[in-house]
Amino acid sequence: MLLPFFLPFLLPFLPFSHPYPEQALGNLDFPDPSITYDPRTQKWYSFATQSASIHVQAASSPFFFPSTWSLLPKVDLLPVPGKWVNSVNPLIWAPDVHYINSSSTGQKWIMYYSGLLSGSEYHCVGAAVSYTGILGPYEAGDEPYICPVEQGGAIDASGYEEDGKRYVVYKVDGSAKGPGGPCGNGIPPGEPTPLRLQEVYWDDGVTKIGEEVELLDRDSELDGPLIEAPNLVKIEGKWVLFYSSHCYNSGDYDVKYAVSEEGVKGPYVRGGQLIGKLRGNFGFRSPGGASAVVLESGRGGMVFHADCGVGRCMWETEWVMGRDGVVGVVE
Ligand SMILES: *[C@@H]1O[C@H](CO)[C@@H](O)[C@H](O)[C@H]1NC(C)=O
Image (cartoon, rainbow, N blue to C red; front, side):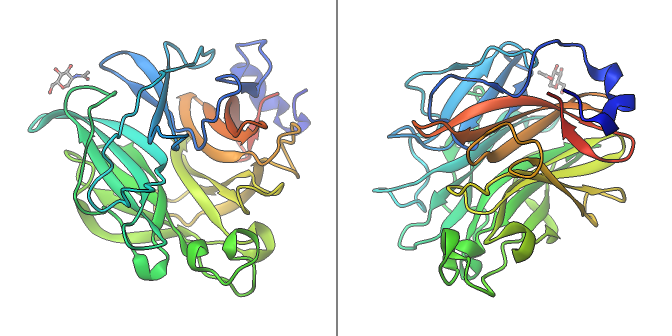
């Protein structure tokens, strides 16, 4: 079924009769999946949060839309997460990998991830680099990369590039130091959990350029204790910030989006839910942690997770942006 108000804009973008969303990797715990195309191997890759003793899980597919994901079993892209990470319980979350091909420093793959800061109850964002290929080995930095400890740390970093500029978006993890309630931050007024944007050098993906910029913060009426899992794309001349709200283990977790028409730094106007209880409801339990790519004019693909009984399993879907700026999932 198509959403009726999309109909005039959707028809050019319906090359498949395939129904989406579709479970992408079987009943495997693969939370917070990211997605990236690797020009070296000419395959698509998805990376996911720690499951059992594997810090960074990986899956690949020769195509995306339609895709045939397969888990790369027993592969851990980040066996040594860095000296700054708690070595007993590293809790590596939400990895994201970007390919860098610099005319001055050559080819590399940069991984952003979150880990439990040693001697702390908070997570911070780390960066690791591979010079050999997308599957590593990745060498982690000795120090955390983005670590506002006094604000609760930072998690869920993902990269974004456009027109020779590179950025990292991430969540300030204020909910980790909140006063209690759902996800530890549901008792008013709670702590802020802003999504921030940091410009970085094109050639290394980590050296910071200027100050970070706040893109969006939680609205406790709309978002409950937090917003997190930011992911940026540009489509039809607009910037779309996908994110999740509410606690990841609650029935209110979702995929939301906000749109900026003026620039990557915003202002971002909330567009509401893409996948969740109120809209784009496919019967998912706690969907969220999405990553998107633009596939062609007005049309993109997305991976996300939903509770599947054995953990959080990966799903994929197609999405479109109509001329009115409304983003929707194609059923
Ligand atoms: C990387 O850049 C070099 C030029 O600097 C180019 O020759 C090469 O094709 C690029 N590789 C990929 C995989 O894009």
